Image (tube, rainbow, N blue to C red; front, top):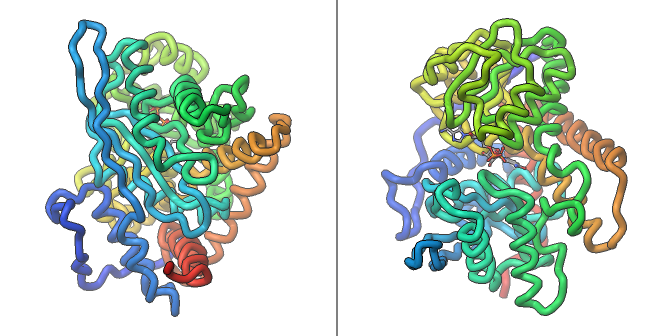
Length: 439
Ligand SMILES: NC(=O)c1ccc[n+]([C@@H]2O[C@H](COP(=O)([O-])OP(=O)(O)OC[C@H]3O[C@@H](n4cnc5c(N)ncnc54)[C@H](O)[C@@H]3O)[C@@H](O)[C@H]2O)c1
């Protein structure tokens, strides 16, 4: 068998990219990371490489001002974004993030990774993403609702069930999707459930959607573990981020007999050598908002989290977490990217050199958008499936997509990330070539 992570993707001379005037070369953030990933795949694109520039710039970026009345009588203004990276294969699709660090270049990168992800699992969507630069934890429920509704109205000119379909991401949830759906519907004069996914089940949401990303992380992890001869039962797992993605992935791994030994979130890091009681930890997070203060564990220094003894590491919080500064200390055999963009290119290379298998976000966390696709299909047909049907279809799609990507990695002796980019970029650029350029 080949080395599980393939041979190094030699970066060669760094490509100098022509940047749009609204970006600064020294402040590219995750967008710079994405551009490097595209550079690495370009040599494998054959004749489609002539279209590759199309992947290096978003199709459409909308910046909106979101003013709202605050409870104290003042008026506050927030920056909002919606970026449609590519729509060659179908309408835009991607989440909405509420976070104080959201920037245009971050939303651009997240939208581009959605294009890759949707093509990798072959759902008929392009890639998009949105966000508001806000710390929602500082808002009252009323302020949060007004913010969500005004933002939805502002981006209403470019979203829609056949144009671009938002979904939850960091700090957005079913309630926020319900407000978005209602606001869009009020403006349209007709209920349009298909405008967002990740809605409550009683409002056209899908069974299984809440757990879908974590379930996909677990499914891909089990498949890959099999390839490298790693037994899930008894494996030690460390998880960063214990929200929707990390919490569910941790729960599924624990149910399969793995030991979740360390968890980190925004409230701190905890550790228990014999494995944490995951259901009790989930209940604690639900009640208190974070893992900090959980009674059944020792407190761990945040930086020490990265050097914990484990076989599987799941970053499931934010991007740029595994860097040149901590990658060398990671002891896991396998990193499963639940978060989008958690590993910098430099860290990717360090992990590769150490023989750590990295299952990239663009395949590992695609379970969420896959069930979002099921939700959208169910909304259009107004015919809803059972949870068993949904989970079975999700697992089948994830397994097939991963098998295809694994095969390409072996064939070209490249990392799973580059292999996923090869599969996805070819699909996107083939669609672009067939559609041609308008006019
Ligand atoms: N929800 C989905 O369906 C979905 C799908 C694909 C990818 N993702 C990605 O997964 C990641 C997590 O999303 P989510 O939906 O679980 O969000 P969430 O809001 O439910 O959870 C986020 C978690 O990250 C933790 N966190 C935040 N800042 C942190 C920090 N500085 N250090 C450590 N932990 C921190 C939070 O405490 C929380 O546990 C994001 O990168 C998101 O883009 C989510």
